[in-house]
Length: 74
Image (spheres, rainbow, N blue to C red):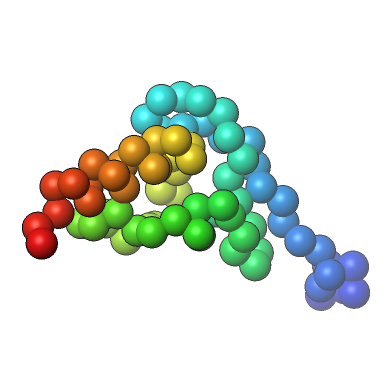
């Protein structure tokens, strides 16, 4: 690895939300991982993230979390 490659950082990609189709910046592929969604709680009962999994925009992820929290036991 060259010095420039060692210092290189990935940048978020412009993607479309899997739910609503709205465009947003996704950092899921960045190395090291730096995405806005890292600060969000994992929705109860959500499957673990997997490579290639389609992301939700901030609004849809917040709605998904709220919906799952409302339906979560306890």
